[in-house]
Picture 1 (cartoon, helix red, strand yellow):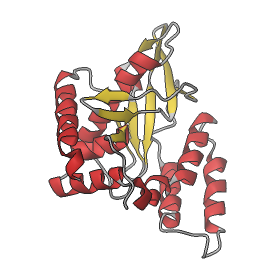
Picture 2 (picture 1 turned 180 degrees about the vertical axis):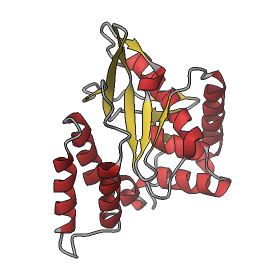
Picture 3 (picture 1 turned 135 degrees about the vertical axis):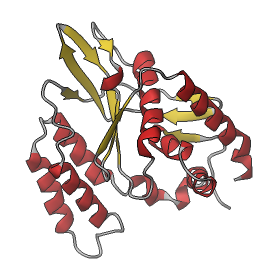
Amino acid sequence: MRTNNSKPRMTVNKLGEFLTASPKKQRSILTALKYPGENKFRFTGYNEARRAIKNYLLNGCDNQILLDCIIALEAKDEDEKDNFTDSSIEALTKVLESDKLDVEGFTYLPYEGDNPKLNIRGVEVSVYPDFIFHSESRGNEFTGAGKIHLSKDGYFGEEGGKYITTMIYSFVENHVDLADRSIKHSNCISYDVFTDSIADCPRSIARRWQNIEAGCENITAIWDSI
């Protein structure tokens, strides 16, 4: 018997993909989420690359961290490699060549909180930031958070990035200790590795929240039929 998730739950990145996907792709996304045991590597295949990119950012964009991971991936025996090995090397190389992430005056910090979920119209959404993003401007201190997106076949475009960062903003607002800092929309970011593109949270988010909620209502409505 197929084991399944009885209630819809997904990551913020996967919801961003869903909201901008074709109906056929949406069905594929929900099937993979409902039956995770049959789709394990779709969710874990890039774990080594993700850890390396996070460590790279949290250690002042130290290229050696990425190079070491590339060397380790290339050194794997053929029976140790999987379908994601070459793609992981490609992803790490793209980050090495990128100038989008090493921004003067911005500080990457680890997110050390729990993983409270956003419940959006019956869908449990995991945000769990990859990093906290600090900046200063004119004597004011700002914060936000970011997610890394690693998927060759799940690109969600600029609009999907806006949906993701809208949810990141809500997560920071409700679940991150701001101390004396203010949330800044541009500090809530989504970085898509394979396209080397960054999206930040728009200042006007009401319409996007309506679309996010409508998408989640659709997911809830059809979940049992998947």
